[in-house]
Image (cartoon, rainbow, N blue to C red; front, side, top):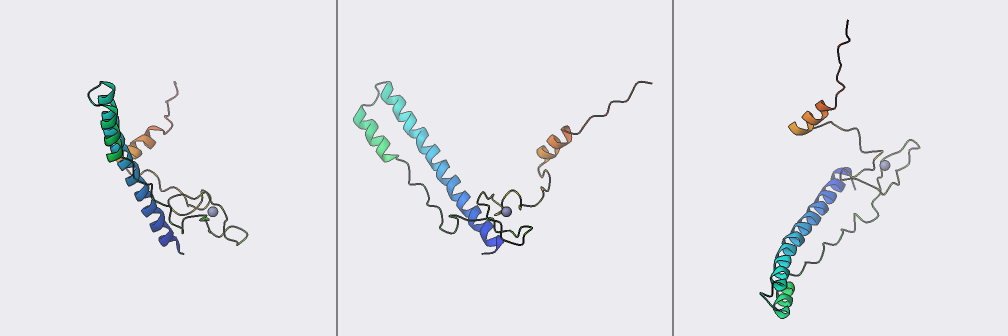
Length: 124
Ligand SMILES: [Zn+2]
């Protein structure tokens, strides 16, 4: 499996997980509102049960088998594939992900500029 394919699978999986999280958050809000109504005695426990059943959380997406036990696989200094399993969205471990390309957004650039050392002129 080449690196582009790995990145595509990881990206797809992360998008699926995000979608699931958003859906759970949306349903949790509805269930929370229903619970508040129940606490205020505006609905009874049967109605609460019905609402909670109607808005139950979906099953989380299953991790694709290609991602299970995925190793970094980059060639290390010994010439062997890296066995690190702690990989990032770029498909490689922290040692083989390449250098940072720096801030991309305007806010990020401003933040990094703010961190530059400030030179104060010495008094004469
Ligand atoms: Zn690695």
